[in-house]
Structures are given as C-alpha cells and as structure tokens.
Image 1 (spheres, one colour):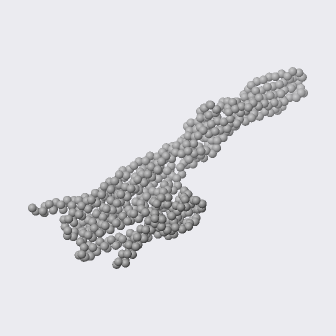
Image 2: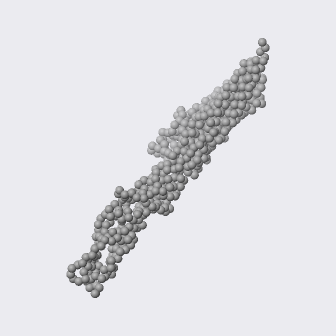
Length: 370
Length: 194
C-alpha cells in the first residue's frame, strides 16, 4: 500500500515537474498544443514531449518569447541568427525569432484522447472509491463528517492542480491573426502622356477599387489649380488644362505636382502625396513639300510660333513678313509660299522655355515660272 | 429554559443557508455558462463578427481570419468549463441526497471550485478586452500612394461581460453559505450527519 502511494506521488511529481519544465529550462518538458495551427500534425489540446537538442528544417520546435507565450510550429528556415517557423495549417510563416528562444524539439505527441482520460480518470476513481469506503465501508474509526471534508478537499485540490498544470502547459500563442490582408493601394508609376495632355497615375490596389476622385489639384511653380480626372481600370488620368501646359512651356516649368483625394471601395479614402510629374513638350515638326511649309504641333496645347518669311520675286531686296501665330493643338499650320520666287521660312518657337529656331529654304530660283 | 425552539430556529436558518448556497451555485453555473458561450464583444464596420471566450468569428475587411491567440485562450478556459458540470452535479447531489453526511461537503467543494473558476473567468476578461481593442485598431496606413483612411470599426460590449463578476459573487456567496451550513451542522451534531 505504501509502495503504491509512493509510486502515485512520484507519478504526480513527475507530471508536475515536466509540466513546469519549460519554465524551469529542463532538458525534457511537456507542453500543450493550444491552437489548431499545426493541424493535421497536431490537434489543439494534444500534449507534446519536447527535448533540448539541435534542430533542422522540418522539425517541430517549441519557442517561447516569454515563459507563457510559446509557439509549437515547424522550422522552415534555420541558420545564422534567426529561425523561421510556420504552422502546418497557417498560410504564412511566423516572424523570425532568435535561436535562443527555441526551448526544445518535439519528439513525442500524446493525443488528447489518450492523455486527458489518463490524467482525469485515475484520481477521479481514487477519490470516488475513497469517499465510498469512508461513507459506506463501515469503518467506525473516523467520524463520517471527516469523509465529507476529505471529499471536498480532494475535489478542490485536484481542481487547483489541474488548473495550474493546464495554465503552465498550454502556451499562449502570441500571434493575433494567422493571416491578415489589409486592403491597400500602391502607386506603380506616374507619367505624362504628352500626346493627350494627361498625367497618368497607375495604381495597384489590393482588395480595394477606385470608385471616384473627389479632389484634384495641380501645382506648377507657384500656381495651383483644380483639375479634372478620369478613372481607367486602376489608373487615374488627370487632364492638364492646355492653357497651363502652354504657360509651363513658355515659362520653362518642367515639373508639376499632382494631388488627389480618391474614394475607394469599403468606405476607404486615399489622400495622396504630391506626385511629381515631369512635363516635357514635344518639338514641332516642320516640313516643306512642294512650296508649302507645314508646321505640325504634336502637343495638346496651342503652340506659339514666331514665323518670319524672307521672300523675293527677283534678284534684289528681300522682303520680310513676320507674324506670331499659334499652332492649334494636334494641328498643322501650312504656309503657302508657291507665289514667291525665292523664299525662306524661319520659325522661332519655345520648348520648355528655350527658344529654338528652324529655318527652311522653300524655293529656288526658276520655280515656278511666272 | 427549553433549548429546542432555539435549536430548531438555528437548524432552519442553517438549512435556509444551505438552500441559498445551492441557489447561488446554480446561478453561478448559469452565469458562467452564459459568459463562456455568449459573445463578449461585437464588432461592426471594417471588422465584423464577435469575440467570446470559447468562440469567435472575425471578418476583417470581408475576409475571415483565424486567431491562434484567441484559440489558446479557449484552452485556458477549460477549468472554468469543468467547474460548470461540477457545480451542477454538486447541486443535483445535494438536492437528492442532502441528508447524507458527505454531500454538503461536496457542495462546499463544488462552490470552492466555482470560486477558483470564476477567478479564472475574471482573469480572462482582461486579455479578451485587450485582444478586442487590438482587433478594432485603426487600420489606416500609409503606402507609396498616400495615406489610406478606413471607415473604422466599432466595438460593442455585450451584457455577458458583467457575468463573471456576478458569477464570482454567487460562487463566493455559495461557498460562504455552504461552509456556514457545514460548520453549523458539525456544531449542532457532533454525531455523524446522516
């Protein structure tokens, strides 16, 4: 009888010590699986036996950031000063941890259907038998009320031990969310489409959609104006007023800033930074075909050109006619010089604030006759 | 002076105390069960769902998420769960076998367990509240595009949050009343209680 009691006490002591082993830094300890992040390998409430030894990729380890905050996950990356673990049922790995936090490698799993009955049943049976013997066993030696006290004592002590062990052995997994994808929007690129006069802002939204543009401001030098926008898939097209472009070209302002207030799906909004945009106008195309000089403006704004024609019908003094004109956006200006015997056309224009000159010889002597 | 009427009054008072103890234990079991089962915090807005001790359902921006931390808290709550059948069994045993000597002691044990368990339940309130406040945190953030502002989420506490305090009071009252009954019985009859 005494031997049985010693064995029972030793068994209880072993379980208690192994349960506390993680905290006491013992080479072998018990730990309880607290969540289903390792399913199907480990189920919640399964008990694992872990030992301190070297580990490699694929091993299931127990790492603890605090004595109570522990994680039982599989090693997916090891080396250097970090270990990365991941739950078999988790879609993403855990944050890297210091190898010193790894308390042990899981070497044995005791399923919950085995250890819970094993832990609960013997003391319950023992307590029930004890109470029954005291009450109905006919032993007159002890007062019967004492058997009640023993029963109450057994219940409370057993419960307290069970609760404490559970608290020590079940590690609190500190990870709040296994996978949390917060909707977001990143900017892919900002550019100026000179042919259309549009600033194109390309976004890559994740779990969000651009619904509307509530505000748009364009800043160039010290000027700030409202702008109109269009949405094209996940891009925002900002229409730059042609007058602004014309002014920027003449003043040589090559950089603008754009700010947007975007309404997104899920009742979210995006207040953008000031996106810098380089605005570089295109050069006009000057050509001469059969006595007709043509100036094509590929820009979306009215292009100022100072045109000077030098002409002469005979040998002798050259006549000059000058005029300042504006070549329509995407339009051509044709100067018919076929009526002159000799002619040159000189076009002065401004691109990005710099004055450039193009001169073309339109006609040669002898053509057209008369 | 005949001590019988006074003794009868005392017996009646101790019996009432025992009945009250069992009533308190029953109330404890009901409150504890409701506390463990019912949602404690309900979310709306960007976060939808609820958080309870034993269960949770969270949809953040329309996507269901799993929380290992909440799952591990449910494991810590196991002693609180065990205390419910223990309290109910104590009440049932006391109701049917209250004249038997050991039963009032078992009821006392049950109320002691209930008191410990309600302490655990009370202790679980704090981490769950912290988790709930972390769940409804401001998800607005800055990216390369700018600052994204979300509508936010609202957190509503449910009446179940008050239950662990009430359960603790009932468990404590049950324990005191059961102890008073048991001690009174021992005082009244040094003979074995049958």
